[in-house]
Length: 118
Image 1 (cartoon, one colour):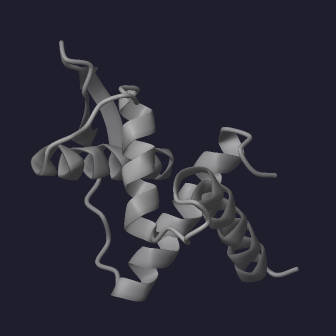
Image 2 (spheres, one colour; image 1 turned 45 degrees about the vertical axis):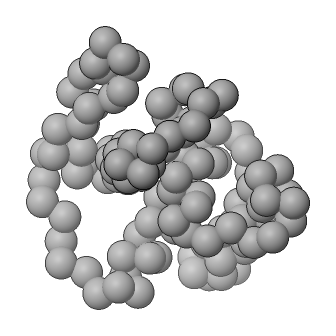
């Protein structure tokens, strides 16, 4: 199986499992999954977030997802429990499709590491 096919299969598994768990089976999109990862990383699961906080959660998720690639490093956690990351390396300029593939790969790796998928 090619690397692309394996990524596609694993991505579909992530979408299916998360969609069943959080959206009654309605397929979640990439942004929704990034948001869920941000909530998971913050660890404050039983609360509602304001619009600007939701964007912050997505930023946390993106930093966490790209940390293993050497783009970000956890810098500190503030008194409210919010993680803050330091950019180590500028992200390369990618086309929209390439960005999507990078994020899907990072998400799949995140859930492989968490043993959510195989």
